[in-house]
Image: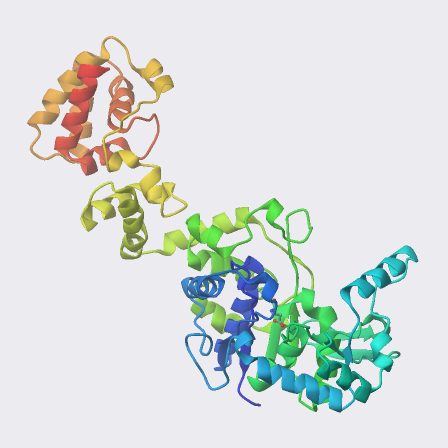
Length: 479
Ligand code: GLU
C-alpha cells in the first residue's frame, strides 16, 4: 500500500470548532498509527468568510492540542502551496480542462435569474436546483461571451439519471441518486474555485490516501467522485465521521454551550483531557477504558471502531476527564500550568517549593489548574474580606481572648508544623475547658476569610508562623 497521508482541511473562520479538532485528531491518529504523514491545508476559497488572524490562531490551537502536522502552512512540504488562495492558476487550468473535455460548462445566469428560479421552485414546492439553462449553450458561443468580458461561473456536469454508489470506511456502501445533485459551480465569478473543485485537485496533488472528514460532507462526495472520474484520477479512501450532538440530540451548536477549542483552553481544561474526551466522541477502544494519553490513542485508534451514530458532547464528562488528567500530572507539570496564572494576577513570586506544598494540600479539591490559585487565594495574600455568615456563627465576645491565648502559644513555638499547631490548640482548649471547635472555626475564618477549605493545621504549616501571627493579630484587633 502507498504511504498513508491524511489531511485536515479547515476553512479559516476565526476559531477551531471542537468538531474540527475531532476531525483533525482522527486524521492525525490514523496517520501516526500507520507511520504516515498528517497534512494541514487551509481552504480559504470563500473570500467573503475570511477572518484576519484566523490561520495563525488555528495553527496555534492545533499546536496547543499537540497535533503536530508534517506539512502545511509555515512548515512547508513537497506538495504545496498548502493555502488554497495561493494556488488559483492551477484550479483555473483544471476547470478549463473539464470544459474542453465536455464535463463542465460556462454559465452566465445572473444572481437575479437564479433568485427568481429559486422562488418559483419554492412556490411550486419543487426542490431548489439549477435548471441547466446554460448547459445547452454552444461552447464556441460561450467562449466568445467570456472573451467579451461577460460575467460567468463554471459548472460541472452531473448525469441527469442514474445513481452513484461509493464505499465509505465507516458507513459501508452509500448510494445517492444523480437527480438529487445539482450541476455544481466549481469556479466562481471572482476567479476562485469552489470548495468542491479545490478539495479534489488538492487531495489528488497532495497524494492524500485517506480523506477523513465530518458527516456534513457526505452529500458532496458524489460530486467529488465524479470529478475524480472526469480527471481520470484515483479516488482516495474516504471516511465520514458521525455528527457531534448537544445533550438533547440536536446538532452541536453555540447556543447550548462553547464550541470553540479556545474557549475550553481558556477555561483551564487540560489539552490532554480535551483531546482524550474528543477522541471518544465517535470512537471507542472496544473495552471500558476511558483515560488515554495521545500516544496511547495513536496505538489504539482504528477507523473500524468509529461508529455511525451521532456522539453527544457532554460537558460533565469532559469535566470528569479533566479531573482524571489533573491527577496524572506531576508537581513539575503543575508548576508550569499554575505559574503563568499567578503571574497574570501579579500576586507576587512564590518558590516552587511553596507551590508544591499547595498542590499537596489542595490536590483532592481541585478540578482545574486555576483552582490552585482561585479557590485558595489566602495562600498567596492576606484575606481582605471575611464570610459574614460564618463570622456571625463562630465569633463570640470571648473569641478574641481565646485567640490571644492561642497566639501566645504559637509565638513561642520553635517548630511550627501541623502537629505542633494542632497540639497547642488542643492544649489551650483543654485548659479553657471548651470544645476545640471554638478555636478551629474562628481561626480558619481569620486565616482564610472563609468557613471551609483544606485541612486547617496543614494550611497553617504552609502559611508559616509569620503570616499566621500577622493575620491573627489583625483579627484580634479589628474584628
Ligand atoms: N474546508 C472544509 C471544512 O471546512 C473541509 C472539508 C473536507 O475535509 O473535505 O470543513
